[in-house]
Image (cartoon, rainbow, N blue to C red):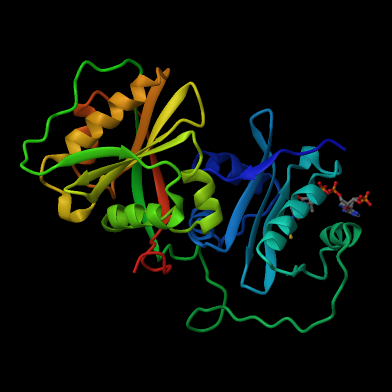
Amino acid sequence: MSALSIRAYRPADRDNLVALWDRCGLRVSYNDPDRDIALLRATPTAEIFVAEEASQIVAAICVGHDGHRGYPYYVAVDPQAQGKGYGRQILRHAETWLTQRGVPKMNIMVRDTNEKVRAFYLAIGYEETPRFVLSRWLTEDGSPPSGPVQATGTLSCTITSLEMTERPSHTPVPVSSQRKIALMRAHSPGAAFYRYLYDRVGEKWLWYERRAMDDDTLSAIVDDEWVEIYVLYVDGVPAGFAELDRRHPPDIELAYFGLLPEFIGQGLGPYLLGSAIDIAWAHDPQRLWVHTNTLDHPKALPLYQRFGFVPYKREDEVIPDPRLHGLIP
Ligand SMILES: CC(C)(COP(=O)(O)OP(=O)(O)OC[C@H]1O[C@@H](n2cnc3c(N)ncnc32)[C@H](O)[C@@H]1OP(=O)(O)O)[C@@H](O)C(=O)NCCC(=O)NCCS
C-alpha cells in the first residue's frame, strides 16, 4: 500500500477537486460545490484535505466538528485508485486532525442501502451504532431545495495575480511627514500581535482566512523564519504591515500588505510597498508575486501595477461572507 501525501486544500485545487467529486458521483443537484468549499474554508472547525498523485487529486475528504463529534463529508477516492488503501488513509488523516483538536468521536451517516460504503467503513474499524437519525430541510415547507441552494452568505470576487520577474529600478517613495517613520521586521510576532495587525488592516476588506485559523496554525506560519513580516510604525504606533512569504523558493510572495484604516490616505502605502519590494529583491528571487481581489482597496491593483507588477492570471471565486459566519463582527 503506497503512502498518500495529504495536505490542506488550496484555492488552486478547486477545479481538480470538483472533478474528483464528479468522478466519484458525489455531486447532487442541491449542493453547490463552490458554496460548500467556501463555507468549509470559512469554518474554523472544518478543513478540506486532498492527496495528489502526478498533479491530479486522487483522494479528498472534508472534515468538521461541532466541539464534541466529528463528521466527514465528500469522502472521495478516484475510481482508478480505489482499493489501494487510500480511503483508509484519508479517513485516518481526518481522524488525527480531530483528535489533535480534542474531539473524541467520529460519526458517519451512510444510507442503509449503500452497501459498498457501509462495507468500507466496517472494514476500517467503524461499528454500526443503531440510533434514530432525524433531520429536517431548513426550507419554508421542509422539503428538499429544488435547485442548487441559493448562495446566500457568499460573495463573488475576482482575484488578480500579478508578478515581477526583474528587480524594478524605483526606490521607495520618501514620505513627506513631520512624523517619525520606521519599518521594522517583527521576528516571531506570535499570533496575538499578528492578529492585531491582520484584523485591523483587513477588516474593511473582509480578509478572513487567517481569522479562521487557530493560534497554533497561525503561529506556525507567522513565526516561520521564512515568513518575513515588516511592521510600519508612525510615531511608534503600528500603522501597517507587509508580509513576504519565502517558503517556496525561488519565488517570493507578497502575501499581505496594508495599512490600518486611520493611516490610509497619507502617502504611506507607496512607501510601505516600495520598501517591501526592495527587501524582497534583496533576497534575489526568481519572481515576486502578489494577488489582490476586487474586495480589496480599489487602489490596490493600480498601485501594484505602478510599482511594476504585471497581471498574469484572473480567477473568479466565491468566498463565504465572513460577516455572516462570525469571523468579522
Ligand atoms: C468509499 C471509498 C472512499 C473507499 O476508498 P478506497 O480507497 O477504495 O478504500 P480502501 O482501499 O482504503 O479500502 C479500505 C478497506 O475497505 C474495504 N472496502 C473498500 N470498498 C469496499 C467494498 N465496496 N466492499 C467491501 N469492502 C470494501 C477494503 O477491502 C479495505 O479493507 P481491508 O483493508 O480489510 O482490505 C471510495 O470507494 C470512493 O471514493 N467511493 C465513491 C465516493 C463515495 O461513495 N464516498 C463515500 C461517501 S459517504
